[in-house]
Length: 332
Length: 198
Image (tube, rainbow over all chains, first blue to last red; front, top):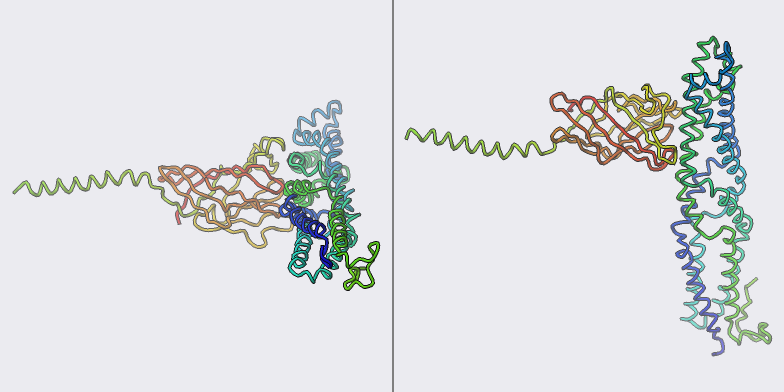
């Protein structure tokens, strides 16, 4: 090896690393998948607030209260013969009876789902605070290209190696620091936890099940407004009596449009983002993300330091006092 | 000489007859575009088929005025019905504060689970033709507007029947909903009434 020429194996390793970084997003299909992640994060943003999630819980509780009022209505309407009132109620109001029956499994399922989303609010916020997913593939490609360019310039202009190796060390340090700057060590695992928690929610089957619930709930509300409340009125109860004796029914009826306005967009967003979720889930685990920066960073820095020409090293690898281009210059 | 006029007449009749014979099948087989309004009358409806994973069957709309709540009956709006050759856009804003559609040109907005839906045509204007009493055409820009959302409900292949004497028509098509809260559901549309040429 000529004095002043960097070590060949280290330069080759740097070039391979650069190519690897450029290839990684293609290998993981990041250019297609990462923007889908960005779309998903953006689509859920309007719903991922404590107030909005509390509102969904309140919607479910409103419907639950209406379902619980059913037996009270049965007792009231069939007061003259309380025995078998429930059966006669179910016969007289089959729509509401069907809703009441189905609601028993809808309520725990829906509240469980909203609980899961609510518990992951912090995780969502952590992921949303990361740089946009759309940029992720470029976080690999840009350093990869920079490494190749610097190596290429060095091969074309041997005299420039000193500065180029310093730049490569700086690039390595930058890559190591990037996850720290973006708090990836805490946020990325949070994202991983969110993805794991949403796995049973963001599926085509689960969304279809909720679509089915929508039909059942709409049926129930229709029965309340068009059958039960008119029946109570016919039995002599005016609006104030219905409101005070059956707050669940009147609350459901009064809030229905709000519930529809509230829940339908969430259902639509869940449905539209099944493919986006799948794309993100197919990416490497979130917890590894910071290491995708740290490891290449360490390798780039390490190879650049190892590539130093012998004449730039002092004894035992320490910079020589007479070395014209101390490689550590400018590196902090 | 006296036979000459008769011969000419015969030749002329033969020519006319041959043209008539040649033209008759062409007239019968060429599709004629119906430009005007397909007025939406009683008997017109919308149904929404649910995918099996969502329970199957048809979505029940408790607010339907039909005895079978899976049928949502619709009636003509301010324009009387669906116009071909031109668009019937939704107004701006398209919805009131509760998400009720204000698109009232094609149909009178009708309650679907408590919120009114309306219809509009966007993009490509509808075209419908008749051939041998059969309707065909495209309604690719047909949309349903409900709860602050727009659902493309068009089709590139609508079918139906048309009686040229009575101007009565029946037009049907199905449209798979892709995306949104009703993703995977299929809208079945059945319009009937009279066609009024423009």
